[in-house]
Length: 106
Image (cartoon, rainbow, N blue to C red; front, side, top):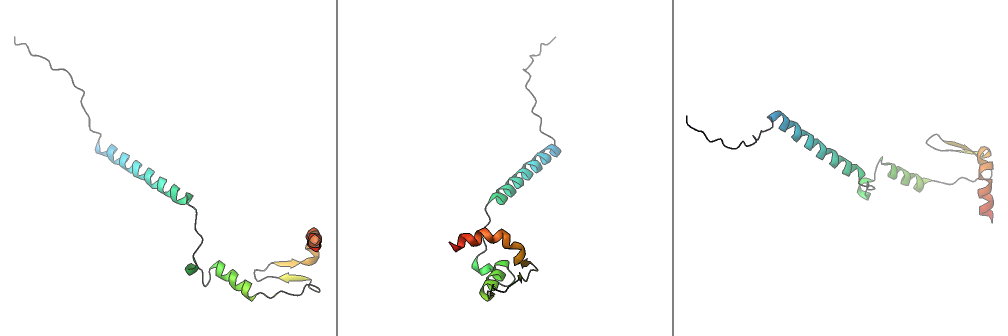
C-alpha cells in the first residue's frame, strides 16, 4: 500500500456569515452615532447672536419691555400686575422684603 504523508492540520478560517457581518457593522455604526450624539449634547450651547434676536424671540421681547417700562410711583401703589398675569400685592410681600428695605436704608 502506498503510504500517504499526512499534512499537518491547519485550522480552518471561517468567514462569519454575512448576517453576522451586517449586524456587527450596524452595531458599530449605532455606537458611533450614539457617541456623536453624546458629544453634541455635552457641548455648551451658545447664546443666540444679535442677528438671531428679533421679533418674537424672548430676548427681543425682554429688551422691548425694558425699553418701554415706566416705573410707577410706589407711595400709593397697592399692587403691580404684569402682562404675564403675575400680580404682586405689596402688603403680602412687605414682611419678606423688610430686611432688604432696612439693609438698603443704611
